[in-house]
Image (tube, rainbow, N blue to C red; front, top):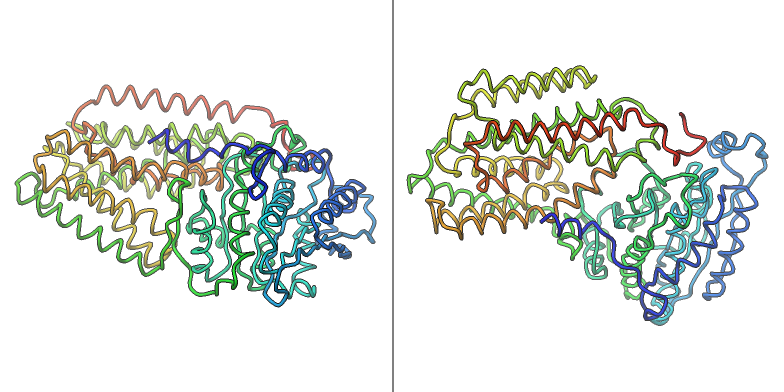
Length: 607
């Protein structure tokens, strides 16, 4: 499971320059990366003009009629520029580069491919957003090799994105070419490696997502990210077109986050495999849209998620109820059979439900406490935290493993009061790290209550397993009501595990045959393989300060592995294992806390 999860989070191999002309080749595109990303090129600089001249020549060579749009820099953008360069002229301009690749029918709404050409001050920007720009060039070349598209393709290379989306805000509301556009694909970057992710869409995306599923062979996308990004204050150029009501897709990569806006974001630090991944996905959906006789119409939002990068599952929001009903029926069948066979007391699942709440409470407090110990809980330098995300992710993984070990091997004590001591010590540790007191108090009360009420022993795995699955089902129902785009994260694991429980209950209620444990192992792998890369991308997206949110993944993994654990034994072994895991997390946290400011930090950032 871990190996498959790691593979899913790894970008594909770079296609050579000799690859078929109708495909995307990162080897071909890297020549443009080297030309554009050799030096910083922020707005209103000579290097910015150099990049524009190079791109205009490249677009014309591809048969794209190209025009420049000159705009005075808005007051907000000018203030940002003055912070970088106090000598900037009040009459400085930004320049958008707009091109059109003609399609067969100019009356059809056009497809727009958008990226920004400017960098922040002092950064070569070989990733942000050079990768997006060159991916558009290679995508155009590949589409031309396939033949003339059905509709015009408008190239929108904006200027001033790094000073407040200035170029996009000038172009989209009023430009005549903007009125011709019917759909937008935006390519962004917040790192220099990892998988490219489609993380944002326009409203009413169901038909668009169906086309995306057909056009992109190895997508990384899920509706939870779309929901989360809608709730976040972050913006990209796509924000402006989305606010105009245009449908579309927004892509970015999050790996190697230390090079975001960094003076060390040079060409040699870019992973060409990431460019290949971005290009494969962008070309897939751009081709589907460019050659389609008509664009998908807006309707309702869809629930969707990739299966470890191998295809996309998508369905209407209402279908989520069918998933939950099927999970509930399978759970009820397993419950009925296990109780009728005398292998589980009717109230036994309450113990498993309590165990998952115990795990969730301890996970939240422990992740928050170690986050505080690493210095990530306050207001550290944002770019320094990005540079240390890899270490912080290992720290979070060790803490999560410690919590998982604890719920399997440490939650039951012969003396109940003794079992509450670790919870109290963890709460005091979190309190000392300035974790919000309300969070510590609330989670500690949940942990103490569920620990006190924990059964002292369990004859079979049924009660704990079905109780754990029941929690997933309850959370999925709540999300289906309040946030249906995110309900799949709990709903589908609940369905897979409930079906596995039903199969085992009706074939081997005593839970002794090797085939029963094989069924559990396969179900755990099915649940875990997509979950691991999702957890990785989630951590890269939310960063260090929100690490406690990752505790939401713990009950899912615990429910998947519950029957494989010797949950009635091992106090000394558990204490030793947990101590080693937390010692490793402590070492990482102390190192991160006392490490000097990362050399990748932009010179203008608040130190």
